[in-house]
Length: 325
Image (cartoon, rainbow, N blue to C red; front, side, top):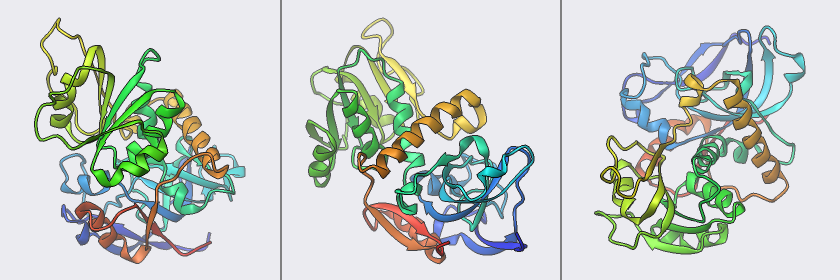
C-alpha cells in the first residue's frame, strides 16, 4: 500500500455522538495474527453510542469507535496467510481496539467472517453485532425449551433471534410496539404482547424462557411470566440479584455480551461464533435469511447518523457507506 494516512472518526471524550470528529490518522499496520481491512460499509449499533459516555470503556481522546464493519482485506500481519488479501469480510471488533468508524481497520484474523459474493456490503455490515448476539442468547437455552417470550422485539437483535428460534421450532411470543407486529409475524412470531412494560408482569407463568432486550429492570418485571425451572436471559444489562426468592421457582439467570468474547473468549469461542456468522451470511446470500431494512448514510455523515440512531429519528438498520472499491 502507498497510502500513509486515512480518515477516521475519533472520540474526544463527549457522550454526544454528534461531537465525534473526522480526522486524518496514520495508516494502521497489522501485527502478527491481524489483517488490515479497507472498510466499504459500517454497521451502527446502540452500543456505539452507549459507550461514548466512557463508563464502559477506558478510551483516551483520539480513539476510533465502532464494532461492525465489512470490507476487503488489503494487508496481513506476520503469520497470516497472504490468501486473505482480496477477501471480502465482515467483522465484529473489540471495544478495546480502534474500531470500524474509519476507512481502514486492523482486525484479528480469528474474528473475520468470510462473505459470499451474493451478499452486498450494507447487509453484511448490518449483521455481526445483532445476529451473533441473538445466536449467543439462544445458545443459553436448553433444547427442552418449547416456548419463548422475546421482549424489546422491535430491534435488530430480536429480528435475528426470532428467525433463529423459529428454526428451533420454538413457540414464539414477542413483546413490542404495535407498529412492529406485521413484520415480526412474518419473521416467525406467533403471539404478540404490547410493550414495553411499565411494571411487573401480571400474566400467567407460562413461558419456558424469556429473552429480554430492554434493560435489567424490564427483565426482572418479566420473571413472573416464567414457569418453574425457567430461563431468564438478559441481553441489555444484567440482574444484580435473583428475580425470585431461593428455592421457589428456581429460575436460571443468564447474561449475554458479545463484546466480552474479545477479552475472555478463546479460539474455540471464536470458531463457534465465526461458524454461526458465516452460516447466516451464506443463508442471506441464498435468500434464506431476512435482513434488516437498511437506512444508509455516507461516511461523512457518520456522527449525525449515529446521533439519529440514539434519538430514534429514523427507522431501519443504520449503515454508513464509504466510497465503493
